Length: 78
Image (cartoon, rainbow, N blue to C red):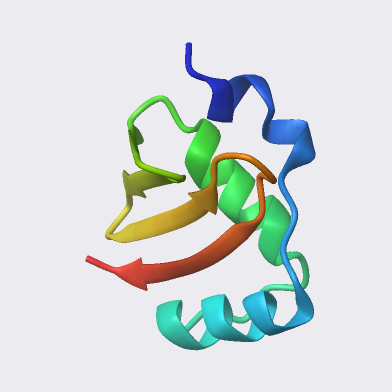
């Protein structure tokens, strides 16, 4: 198990992050952090760390998380 999964309770984002994620993924959810956490914790998600970020790839999207602060930076469609 990697640090991202072990620290999933620390995941958060900024107000701008919420807007960016909703726009990039074309989603309309009330709690973007919970939505992203569900994807990250899914057993089919592929998680890898490159430099200062974690990348969680699943369900047609890639979620980028800062490895030190656990801030969800952005998300994109694959």
